[in-house]
Image (cartoon, rainbow, N blue to C red):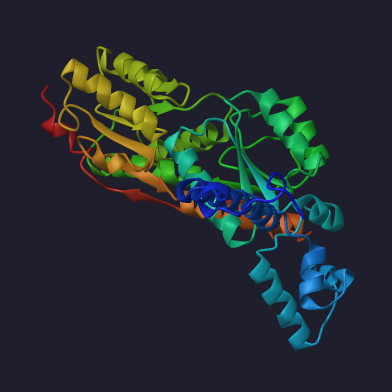
Amino acid sequence: MASAATLRRFSPTSDLPTVNHFAVYATGLVNRFCRVFSLGYFLMTTRKITIRDVATAAGVSVSTVSRHLNGRISLPEPTAKRIEQTVKNLSYRPNALARRLTHGKSETLGFITSDIAYPLFAAIASASEAEAAANGYSLLMFNSRNIVDNEIAFLARIDDRQVDGVLLMTNHSDEGPLVRKINQSGNVVLIDEDVPGARAPRLFAENARGARLAIEHLIAAGHRRIAVIAGPEGLLSTIERLAGYHETMEAAGIEIDPALVFKVSYDESAGSEAFDALMGMADPPTAVFAFADMLAIGAIKLARQRGIRIPDDVSLVSFDDILHAELLDPPLTTVRQSPEDFGRRGINMLLGLIRGEKSETAIQRIAVELVVRKSVCPPSKRGG
């Protein structure tokens, strides 16, 4: 018989934890279970879905899924739909690197510009991105800061298969290394400005026609002493717009004063300096044609500082029709070149090049139109 030392009655009050202690103990177990379960669920739901997962869920082989997604097999409709629904349900995304190795394409295009902050270039870049996306491509932007070595370095990405082709907007008209890199890389479309010697399709504005429209408008208003604030020496836009200016002036029988022609960089401060020099002449022009809206904006700022009234004292016409043009005081009369057309046609020319299609013409042109606002009036309204 057991002694009192070895046997004792079970006491609920002494042998069980108190209610509070038990609740804490139970809560701890539950919390621990929840943490373990949550971690397992987190790992399960965040693990990258693979093509093997798709194949297992769809009840087909990995190779069948791969060939279907890459368009290399014709499957019965129920099987194809089952694979596609599984891909959708699992949110499966094919490995980009694997697809690049399989197809030899990155499904990414490049866009090089000398200055992404320049309003026209930014608008063309935006339109290009939209058109690329509509065709299933991403667009990688690159701002060269007008440094030719940066442009060459980015073009090397074609060789590395990081991009399938490039839209190039450069302000370097005659650079041997740049020409060689374009010709070596291929799949490059030049837009807005030219690189002579490059074996590449080209997309430019109707520069000469745009200049004719601007000068004809000024002549029709009665102006004969017409100055130009042109772009940099050697650029296609400068050459062609100057040609349009000369042709129109000569056709009207107006003698051209070489002192009224300024070639400057395409920026606001250069426009201010050129306009200041023109209006400081003993016999200033009655009208000015700026080859870019940013040059015209610089001219308007200088005019405001000097108390020169546009168009009463001097008329002003420009080229581009950026978004700011109609908001200026006065609203700017300018030649419009469509950034939407540049983006849409540029991307489609590049995609055709990538597909091996031959372009009908080596050079294509973007149509221009004169947008008449309130920066031009007859010279008779000038104050002197």
